[in-house]
Amino acid sequence: MNTPKRQHTALILLTIALIAFICAHICGQQTQIEPPKNMGADEYSILPNPNALIWMSMGQREFLADMIWVRALQYNNLKNEAHIAENFADAMLALDPDFKAVYQWAAVASLFSENISVRSVETSNHYLRLGSKRFPLDPYYDYTIAINNISYYPEDGPRSEDERRSEAITY
Picture 1 (tube, rainbow, N blue to C red):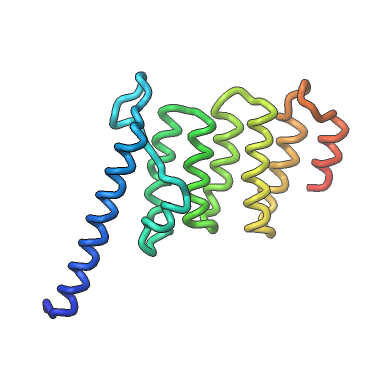
Picture 2 (cartoon, helix red, strand yellow; picture 1 turned 90 degrees about the vertical axis):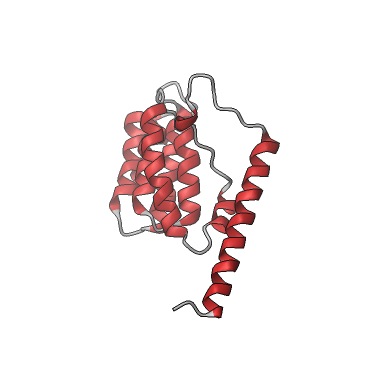
């Protein structure tokens, strides 16, 4: 039944959606973001910063995190760049910090998307530490940090093998 109260609520939600669309359009024009030349428009994604995503989710944070998750899996598969995975992971974790798979995916994607380097190992360990803090009873995170430090950390990195092993033992 269409009551005046329900119509009023629908009108308010429609107005909010219209304002959000206009703001996003204006912001997009002001930033003058153009996709890289090697990408089609359908392959290119722009994520607002995580704080803006929280506001734009209108209380449906987990749903928006799931939508970004689907796009992140497609996008990272296409482009295979670590910094892209980090942007998607930061957005999803800001929206839903209990999204367990994101911590694991971000750690793997940041480590293996490009050449393994000191930065990629440290970035992977960063997401694993976040996951370990959020889910302290799950041994995956600590175990994987230890494996990263022993097996994947480049030998020419700034930390010696003994330092890496002693850190790995703490996990």
